[in-house]
Every structure is written in C-alpha cells, then in structure tokens.
Image (cartoon, rainbow, N blue to C red; front, side, top):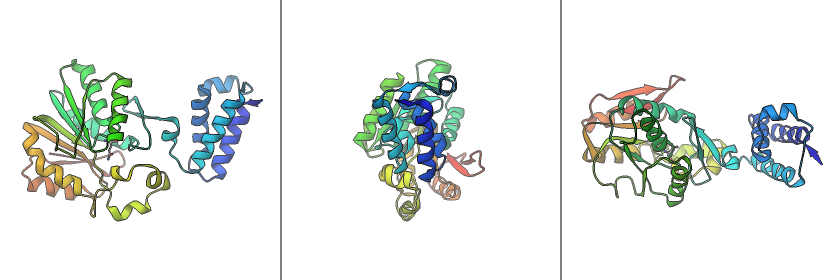
Length: 279
Ligand code: GLN
C-alpha cells in the first residue's frame, strides 16, 4: 500500500533529480490529477492510501514528465482565460501570454457581431472571446475558427462541446474556405523563424506540433499571407489582431502600414515585450 505522502515524495524526488524545472510543482499537479484530490485534502490526509493501480499510474506519468512531455499533455488540461481547455500533442498548449491578445480583442470587440480566428488550434482564443462577450451581452456574437490541421480541429471541437460555447469550426488553409466578412480577425499564427526551432526547450521542440510554431525563414510567413488577404474579409472599421514575437513589433507595424491598415498599435505584455499588433 502506498500513501499520498509516499507518492508525492517519490514524484518530487524523481522530477527534481531528473532536472525538470519546477519539478516539485509538477509532482503536486500530477498527484492532484491522478488521485483526484486537491492540496487541502492532502494536508489533512497525507497518510491516506491509494490503490496499486493509482500508484502505478502516477509513477508512469512521472516517468513521462521526466522525458519532458509537457505537464498539460499528461493531465490533458490547460487553463486559459479562466477556462479549462482539453489539449493533446496535436495542438499548441495555450499560453498565458496569449491572454494579452484576448484582452486587446475584448477591448475593441464589444460590438463585434462576427469574429474569425485563424490557426485556432485548441480553440482557446476564439472560445474564450465568445465566452466573455456572450456573458456580457448575450448570444448575438458569432465566431468562426479555422485551422489547417484536422487533428487540431478535433481538439477545438471537443473544447467547444465540453465548454458549451457555440462556434463554427472549419478546416481551412488560412482564408481558403472562409466565407463572408468579419468585424474582427484574430490570430496567433506560427511565428518562430524555422532556424530557431531547434534551440527551443525540449518540452516545446519535441512535443508540441512543429506546424504550430514554424513561421518560415524569418517567422513572418503567416503574417504576410494573412495581412495581404485580410482586407477582403474585414468589415469597415473592423480590426485585425495578432499575437507577435517579442522582436516582431517593428516588422508587423511595417507590414500593416504597407497594406493600408490604420490605427496600428503594437502592444507590450506585462514583461514589457512586444506581444500584440492591431490595425
Ligand atoms: N490559436 C492557438 C493558440 O493560441 C494555436 C496557435 C498556434 O497553433 N500557432 O494557442
């Protein structure tokens, strides 16, 4: 028989000795996930025993985490804008940094009737925007999420069902299958220069989908394609909103200017780095 305390001590030791950054923290989260308890339960009942099956499942996940599989892929869950999103290896794990993009969209989108999210992945951006707008002003806002990857769209569909947020999801290479016009076009496209991908941390490089990261030789491939075609899909006064890399502010400003966008703004995140471009 194994107690919760023995299990947690094992996980903490294995992950810190396995040089996993924040290993102790991950050991906790895996235990909460596998044993279906929260920390307060643990502190009251550290000597409670778990079944052999549960202990085995925990050890297995710890081994996987030691091999740098991201924690969110092991628990199948990532929180974004206060909502629990299902994730697997076919989508980019929602990043807290991306909440900055959602916030900028919400600031400008209070009256938006139709919103498009390109490269929707898990659907975290589109679904959280729709959730926020509908909770403030009811169900009138509609949303379309597009992704080239069929397995990514399956994840977005699962999130739509799980969270009960109505949205249209389409398999589309950027605008290819998109019809009609929008008040807002939003995207967190792949934007990492191809040559830099190899230098990313193992969790990202080896376990998140390369197609969600690789933005072509200079990282701007998707921005160029989207900016060129967006005017045909934007309603008058509509906004195009991107997440961008920390050093891409100037590049985005130039691309948006060239295409005739107005009211261009590059917005910094809490760390003071360029994070969002709008026009
Ligand atoms: N839109 C998704 C996200 O922000 C996926 C982005 C991507 O795959 N590049 O998490």
